[in-house]
Length: 433
View 1 (tube, helix red, strand yellow):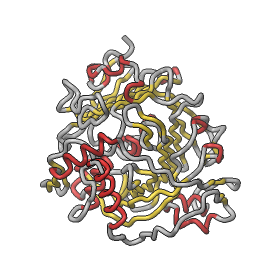
View 2 (cartoon, one colour):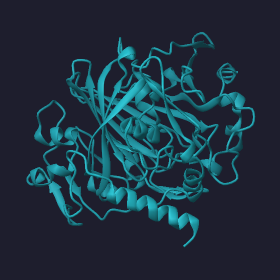
View 3 (cartoon, helix red, strand yellow):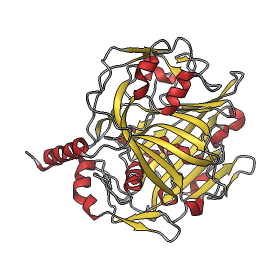
């Protein structure tokens, strides 16, 4: 047995033998592949649904499951994380420590790459899991260009739909494990991760762009910049504006990065339990054709996408630390986090009065990632947010309506490797020139 195989074996034993939390299920509870879940029989399978999904089936809010909705269940497919990422976990995780901060939050020290806490235990078990979510495997470069724009559509209670198409560059500048890529991109420090995006369509919104920079030192607030076409220059935003609607949608800056984009030093997390939930991860590019391939008006995936499967998840209750709650929009974020990929698969967001506000479906799409192999977390995802208070909905689609994916890793054109243009504010001022 190689050292890598031994690591996989040990991690499997840890997951199998870790004590069950409240709400756990035994491994014997399952759904037979081929089962069709409909409005007529959904209550037989509600134990496998997040709370928000149950609410959609119950029809207790404005947004509800369409009468003809159907979920076909297939076998669970597990794709191992990249071997280089797991090797980094084995090499470096023992040196990662949790540090208490004066404001009541936590930080970590000693993190280099891989999973920070492969077997999170008390104390701060929930926060350690949140750190695993933040540092989960993602392709080091994810790019949408004018040739393969992603689409974001907003929908109101009258079923009026308006869409924008964006290009973007998400880049990991440190902690990289993809083969042939420097673990630390030259010239990048102290930057850790950057998000650049720009509206390409419709024409009247074209060139509106934003850049967010996260730093290696997590206690350093992220920098936020916006390019204003009317002014032909960029403006620096407030780090406190984490609740502002992004591109007019029902998503906020903290909701991006494929499910969670909040600075983990501002949050704590409690483990509510472990369970199996229905998730859609093995699906086709049919998902990009909105609204034709969606069951409307909810916008629920039609069976032609592919089969749902049961995934083992941790259920986390994520909240701002008390010293950071003033003015923050969410009272709590209930996250259903995949145990293998550490990716959020579903979230229920509550307002400051602890009233359910948004139901969020997160569907990472499995595909081949150059240098990493077949991955569930691949830089391609469909995200949907249903605002049950304001009766709005947001649908983010990648792949595109014509079935093209974003570029990841070596697929990206070389021009998008420009750190100055896409990872710093100077690049925003090159727009429209």
